[in-house]
Length: 489
Ligand code: NAD
Image (tube, rainbow, N blue to C red; front, side, top):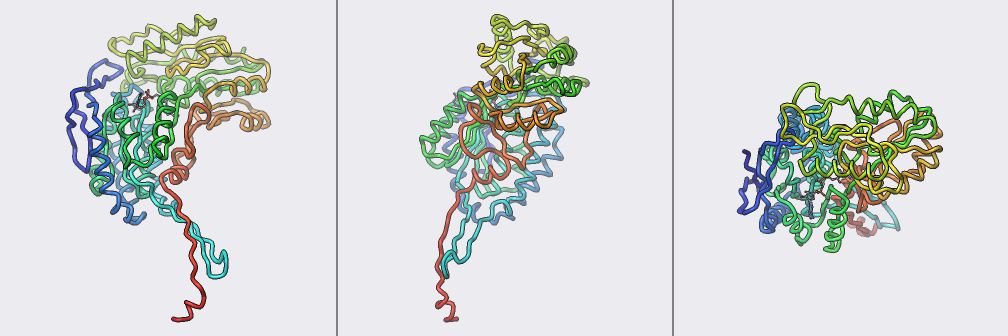
C-alpha cells in the first residue's frame, strides 16, 4: 500500500498524524493507499516555506519562470500512461478518459508558458504633458488550491501553472479520496528544479482546508467541489480578506429539438451523461425533448444507456468505469429511488450492478429516469452519477424557462440544426458554458472555465487570461518627468 506524503519546501514529509483516510480502488474495492489527515501545523509549515520562497521567485523574470513549465510539460507527456493508470485506479474512470484528462492538464501548462506576454502591463504616455500612467501586474503572493476527487490530475492545472508563472508561490491540497495522482505529479515537479518552497502540497481534509482558509500569509484561494462546500470556502476565505474563487456543483440540462441530427444527439448525449460514470461537472444530467423530438430520442437514448459496457477502467473495451466509492453508489441508488417515488419511471435501471470478477467494486450501470417532474427533488439535486433524467415540453421557450429555473448554471446544451434556435439558446440561457450540438462544452485552456449561479462563487474564473487576472494584482503608477529635467543631460 502506498504511503502518501506531503511535499513542503522541496522535501517529502511524513506528517505526524493519527488519522488516515483509506484510498480505495473503486473498481476492485482494494485499499491502495492511505491519505494522512494533515493538521493546521502542516499547513503552517507549507505557508512558511511558500512565504520564504516568494521574494526571490517574484523577482525571477517571467520568461525564466516559464522554463520550469516547459520542463514539466515534457515530463507530464513522457509519464502520461503511468499518470492515467493511477487516475483510473484511484478514481474509477476508464484509461482513455484518464488520458484525455491529462491532455487538458498539459494544455493549461502550454497556455501558461505564454505568461510573459499575457501578464505584461499597459502604459499611456502623456496623460498630461510630461506625465505617463502605467499599469503593472504583480503576483498576489502565497496562493492555494483545494481540489475535488473527479479529476485528480486536471483540475489543479486550471490554476497551478498560471499561479507559478505569474510569480506566486503555491500550496496544493488534493482530494483525500484521490491523492495518488498528485503524489506522482509532484514527483515530476520535484525533478524540474524549482527553488525550494515555490510549490508545496499538503494532504488532508477539513482541518487542512480550514487552516488554509484562515492562514494570514495565504492571499488567494481557488476551490473546486460541491456547491455547499464552495459557498463555505468562499464565505470564510473572503471574510478573512482573501481573493477567492469557488467552483461548485451542477445539474446540466440538454434540450433536443425535433430538427436535431438524432443519431448524433443520442450518441453525444449518452457520452456526456455516462462518460466518467456521470462524475463530471459538465455531464448532462437531464434531457428535455421539444415536440416531436420525444418520439425520436427517448427510445434511442434508452438503448444507448442499456448497451454501455461497464467495468474496470483498465480492461479493454470498457466504456464506463466505477463510481468513486460504495457510499457514492448507495447515494446514487437512493436518488434513483427518490426519482421513482416522485413519479419518474426507470426503463433502464443501474441499481444493484455487480460486475463479474469485480464483485468488490462500486458500479452503477447507466440509468434513465423517464418523465422526471419539474420542481421535484430529483430534478433539483445533483446526482453525480450515471443517471439521465428525461423531460418533455412543447416549445423551446418552455425548455429555456425550465433550464433557467434551476439553481445551478454550469452548462446547458442544445441539439438542433437551426441557427436561429441556437442563437436564441446561447443568448437566453443562464449558464457559464453553452454547448450547441456539444455534450461536454469544456472550454479550451485559453478560455475561462466556470459556471454561473449556484455553480460558482467568485469573480475571475479558472484557466487562460482569467487565471492571470486572478493570480496578479494590478498596480497603477502615475509618473511626472518634466521636460525641463531632461534638458539637463
Ligand atoms: P467536495 O466538495 O466533497 O470536496 C472538494 C474538496 O473540499 C476536497 O478537497 C475536500 O477535502 C474538501 N472539503 C470537503 N468538505 C469540506 C468541508 N466541510 N470543509 C472544508 N473542506 C471540505 O467535492 P467532491 O465530492 O470531491 O467533488 C465532486 C463535486 O465537485 C461535485 O459537486 C461536482 O459538481 C463538483 N465539481 C465542480 C466542478 C466545476 O468546475 N464547477 C468541477 C469538478 C467537480
